Length: 129
Image (cartoon, rainbow, N blue to C red; front, side, top):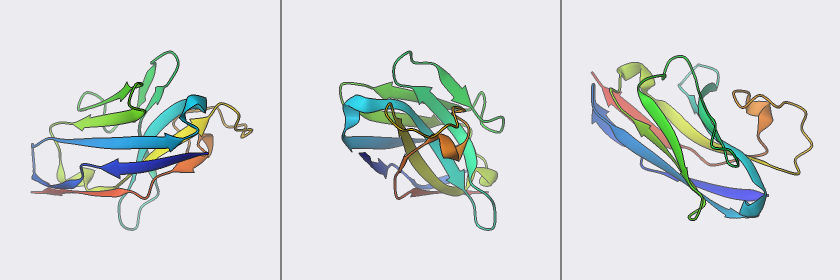
């Protein structure tokens, strides 16, 4: 399994930017997909973005398309989420997730939480209006 640690959260004003990082350790050679989800108080966990660690394909949730960019530094086993034009509704705890190549879960959609078998502890992002 892979251990994930997020960083980069904080408080920014409406229209500002933040970059989140997620550092992976452990069996990183087996990483297949890495992604970001978020959860606001009283709401379900929402897909934000994902990246295929092999081919580099990226996927985004509808609410962040055009504003957020996911990327990965394979040499550092780290993924990033660049968040621009932030809105108060982006306020949430952001979680990093990873799927290992040998994970037997049958949900192959990167936008589904069930696609992943490793999760970070989360980092708080707060956008002030």
